[in-house]
Every structure is written in structure tokens, then in C-alpha cells.
Image (cartoon, rainbow, N blue to C red; front, side):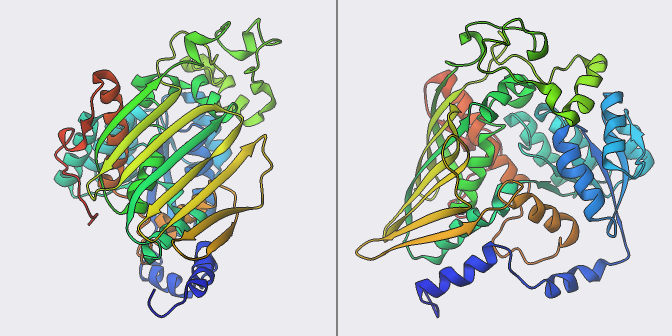
Length: 448
């Protein structure tokens, strides 16, 4: 590396990864727009909408944004969201009416995944830039509609890939692009969801492919985006295998939801939602409006997503990735290894579960014919510290230099979900699927 020895590099970039940076220059950049508040509206007032983009945005950025509207078809959940977020924000059940009356500069989309494209496209048509939760959408047709609308309207889509902003994942990016382990040739990436968090996807609307696109899209788009970002390349083809062998129809018994289930005393997956006050107010008290059960049975017959996933992904720059996702592990976390021409990066990130969890995330760097180095990154709350840093980039410092290329637009959102869409198609056909066959985007060996 130029001008820095390896140990100096680790120390200096560790400070950046942990967020130990002066804020004066960043404030100066944002000061160019001081005094002009952005009008913000939100569609989708579930736990993610209220907990990540509702209350925190309202409280942290009052000086630079005005919250002008909240929208949700469930009137009870909408009213609770208003009281939870604060500020007596105007409420709407009619999306078109909210957009036309409030004319927001920024629309935040946190609805059921399959409906994202409807609000993203219409939001841009009505004059707003859009901030959308991942996944950007759930199939190739909706993806193309978003790409077309962005080109047609000139508005901007931002996809909220918060994992990019967590310090330890940023550190991996820095090490890769330092060149110390040479050219990356292959990656081993294995993600483990535990029997609490993993099972939760099978309780909710995510259990249905038609609503969440399956975990290939809803959950794994996070992981595929990390790969695309780390490698600074785009996926070219994928061959996938998967099955539903643990949840859904495979259960020993089933009910409608945990509260009413006669098997709660013998079911390992029984979950008492009554112990979560916010979920009671947000969901249970408002079931009468739409019939949605937040504590649905993980063994319901209508579960049609996969609970085990394995894939081989080939990138346009020649890198091959071995990927898997398990949804019933005793612990939560992931293992990843980058194989390079000069060395290898290994990380085993443990987030929760039966195993003892350290107060740091460790990255091991092995150099061919050289030493081994261990880098410890302090752990932070909120998806590894990514949530707060992402919000600050969007609302406080939108013009700040994006040194680590963490901001994600529609192309990033598309390339993340298209791997999962292609995986579903590969499962159906038993053959590899080319990403370039799904939309008008041609995968690039080097991201622009």
C-alpha cells in the first residue's frame, strides 16, 4: 500500500469504521442548504416504518425536515403511528390525496414488499424523490417499471441498504480495496438466522412469495447487495437450490396464530406477543381493520417460501460466490471469506443465540507467505451501527463525499433483488439464470 504500512492502515481506517471522524467539514457541506426544510411523507406505518423512519427521523432531523404526512390503509395502525412518532403529523388512508395535498420532496416507502413499486413509481410521477426500504421490489417486471419511471421523471430512488453503513462491513470494504490480499477470486458467504428471528419470517406476511418475494429477495437482497458493494462488480448468473423442509406444512401441528393455538404448551415456536407492548398497540389492537396476525403460526399450510437456500453466483468480473441462507440455526450471524491472490479475509460475525457473543466483531486477514492480523471493531446497536449512519447520510449530509460508495440507488436496488428473482427462476427450471435476461440492465464487470 502507498504511504502507509499495513498496521498504520488498520489503525487509521479502524477510526473511520468506528465513526471517529471530525464533523466540522460535514456540517459545512450541509450548511449550503440550511434554512430550507425538506417535506417528508411516509407510506407504511408498521414496525419498520415507525421504528426506523418514523420516530427517529422526526426526532433527529426536526431542523432540516418537516413531516407532512403518514399514510396506511389500516386506520388504527395509522393513528397509533401518529401518537408513537409524535408531532401530530397529518394522517391519510388515501395515498393520492396525501401526495397531492402535501407535495412532499421525499417519500419514504415501507409497505409490504410487493407493493413498493406501486408507490415508488407513483411517488416519482407526483414529484417526489423516493427513499425505499429494501428490497426495492419483488420481481423483474416491477423492477423495470421503477427503472423506467426514474428515467422518465428525473426523480431519484434511494434504497436503504443499512448493512453497508455498519463499521465492520465498511472495514471489510476498506481491506478489500486496499489491495493487500490482491485480486479477489472467490467468496464463501453463509448466513444463519436463528430459531427466533428466522422463525419470525414465517409468522408474518413474509411467509408468502406473492408478498415478500421469498427470503431470496426479502432477506438475501441485503446479502447480495453487500457482495455487489464489496466486490464493486455486478452479478452475471446464478444457479440455486432450495426447499421448505422445516416450517409450514412440515410442522407437527398448526394453528391460526399463537394466541389462540391449542398447542402453545408443546410448541417450541410459541411466541407470546402480549409481552411486547408496542406490538400489541401496533398490530393486535388493529387486527379488526385488516385481519393481519403478527403472531401467525410458523406451520401454517399457506407458507410457500423456502427455509433453506444455496446458490452459486458468477460475477461479471470473474469472481465466483458460494452462498447459503439457513433459517433455523441455534445462533444468528454469518461467516464470510474472501479468497485473494495475495491472501484471505475471514470473518465470523455472531449476532445472537446460544454462543457467547463478544463485544466486538473480528476480522482475520491472512497474507500468503506472511503474518496473520486480527482487527476488532466495536459493536454498535441498530444493525451493527448502520441505521443511524444511513439516516444521517440521507437527511443530514446528503451532499457529503461518499468515500466508501455506501449510498445506493435504483441500479443497486435492482442488482440486489435480481439475484433473488433469478434464484427463484433457477429453482423452477433447474438451470442457471442470467441476470441480463431479466431487465434492460447489462451487468458490469466494474460498477460505475
